[in-house]
Image (cartoon, rainbow over all chains, first blue to last red; front, side, top):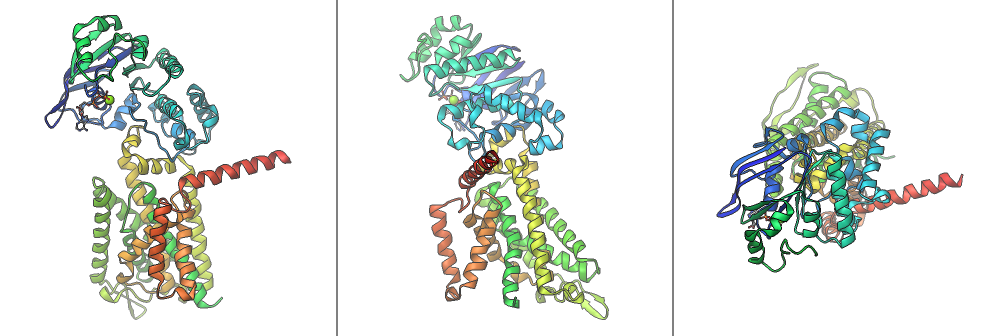
Length: 258
Length: 305
Ligand SMILES: Nc1ncnc2c1ncn2[C@@H]1O[C@H](COP(=O)(O)OP(=O)(O)OP(=O)(O)O)[C@@H](O)[C@H]1O
Ligand SMILES: [Mg+2]
């Protein structure tokens, strides 16, 4: 599904991502963890085309993605959320979802009216479903900037879903969430996966990753230091050292609480 | 109505086109100091169409708007990689280039024993379509307002459409727009072309209303005012820039005791507004609140029946 080979990104002297090899299989939830600054967000940015790689390849469904623009990668089926929430604050919640529906499937199905004026019943029904999925049924007409933090996170998730991705990249979706919200989030992640979406989950909240991910890779200073099932990773020496050797704020993988 | 009032009212409408043009780019996040170039190019093109080629005025307006639109798209494509201040300066440089070129363009032909066409620094005189047909100033003013209404309705429809949302997306987060699967390059060029064409309609009308145009009129002050109108009136709706024009050309021009101090009053007004209302009187937030109020009100009314 997704194959990173020798992927590197250097910022001046900083090797943010260094010779990374990762393979994500179709239909799995793959966790990517690591201390602060270990290159997780940079990896996501390389996969979806925000950064140009220094070396290495990104293959998605056998197709080479190197050199493709972000909008081309989205249409190929790669959607994402951001570590720092990014929405269109001047658009309503409904409009934020409306403009995200650019999958080839939707574009082919939409007529002129539906595509540009959002007028057909099907468009409206599908956006209503997305609102329900994100628990935002009554917020459709609010400006995105007027939403509470948790609602904004859910809208971002729904917006990524609106693109009908085949691969969804989540960059710390649980940051700042309480227990209940994390529980809801893991439900939502599983529902996405069950509908056929492969998921790459970057997360610090171990309770979430260890709970939903089937396989995990651990980054440290841009390099993969371990990978395997959540159990394998938790028992791994190098991983424990990487976490204990850095700032206090990182929860080591053995800690399943938050 | 006396001619002075008609002239002021017509000016309000004609300047509104260039204000709408600058507004369209402002909502996509681009500050252009050069929309006067498209106003001017179209004034010349439309003037040439009706005088040198004896075409009807609607053809002149269409040609002017197309010339302005296509040139704007070309310039937009060339300046795509620039952003912020660099973009703004490039628009200004281009507009000055157009003005200087118009100052030396001399293409005159003989029509009915008279020489007509652009005459370099002397400008472009005798664009007399209106007078040859005995159309009164009042009638032409109504024609201008008719076209303004058409353009305004078109822009309001665009704002309601997804294209309008895409323009606002470009204005708030270019990368995020790209990440929705939208080719931002294509939409930016489209916005540039639409903005050029809108300014062009105004320029074509201006040439025929005043019967002569000179490059000096399309100087940078016109572009700066066009920008200021959107910033005063607000970036939340296409009515915003019109409010800006009405305040400046209408109110400040009409109130006699301000005469002579107009630029000072106007400059101060812009400065104060930008501090307290950085996105203008009718900004996105207020427009949204008004829309919500209106829909509640109409909903309540429908239920009350
Ligand atoms: N645009 C950039 N320019 C320069 N350096 C960068 C840039 N982006 C990231 N870096 C550096 O690359 C390294 C990896 O950053 P990255 O954001 O990928 O880490 P991360 O694993 O996502 O960390 P966190 O858990 O804090 O989000 C860091 O040292 C960071 O300072
Ligand atoms: Mg990060």
